[in-house]
Each structure stands twice: as structure tokens, then as C-alpha cells.
Image (cartoon, rainbow, N blue to C red):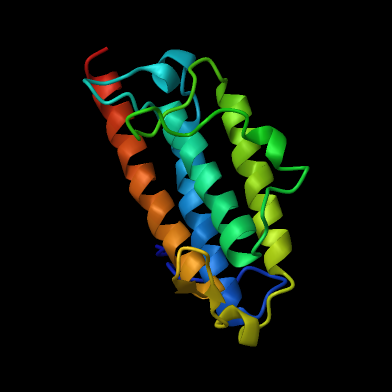
Length: 176
């Protein structure tokens, strides 16, 4: 019997060290997208308990955080690129600071946003070499960050919210 080979590969088109972390980032996304197959509009927009954070809001938040780290922190821009800005027309938090987005956005819209943001991220990281990968960026909030840490953080961030989404789906489907 052939055992599956569990390994980390490098995403093609990048130095291997960078490509491995980007492959991990893509692997986290692959598992999220697999679990989202068949999610209904009701599941996207259902509030569970007192927390207004829905699955749709988490998907919006994942994309927003990824593009924010890229454009503002890694690249030092003042605003999003014109191709990305239209994907973020609503605030990502409510007045209480909780993760939120308006209900009603389809799964397809969420997936298109995630895809557009990821394409942009991967395309812009192609210009990063190993020296730049570890070069600190001084940010206005008075901390320094490297592209390597940003990618690590985005893996951790999406994996965390992916777990929340999986739990929320499980709860909804168990009681329906």
C-alpha cells in the first residue's frame, strides 16, 4: 500500500526558502477552500450567540488583513492598489471593534476577493530576494517587521480563523 508523502515543497518562482513559506500559506488556504464547498448564504451570514462575527465576516477579515500587511506594512504604501481597493468597500469592524461585514455577500464574492488578494500578494513577493526577505521595515506604529515574519503571521492568522470557521460550520450543521 502506498503511504501518502507528507512534505513541504517550495512554491515555484521564488527562492526555495521563501517558496516553502508561501507553499505553507497556500496549503492553509487550500484546506479552507475545500471546507467552504457547499456553504450556503445562511451559513455565511448566521450570527452565533452574541458575537456578530459570521463566517462571511471572517472571510472578509482574512482578505483584509492579508492585503493590509502587504500594501501598508511590507510595501509601505499609503493606500491599496486600484485593482484591490474595490474589494474592500465596507468596514471590517463594527463600532465595538468586533470583526464584522455586511451580510448578503455571496460565497463566490468572498472567494473571488480571497483569490484576488492572494494573486496580488504572490505576484508582489516575486520581487523579494533573500536579502530583502529579512530586511526590516520601520512602520509608523514604531515597530519593525520583515517580509518573512509577515508571511509567518499570515499563515498563523488564517489558520486561526480557519479553525473558527470550521467550528462555526460544525455547530450550525450539527443543530440543523
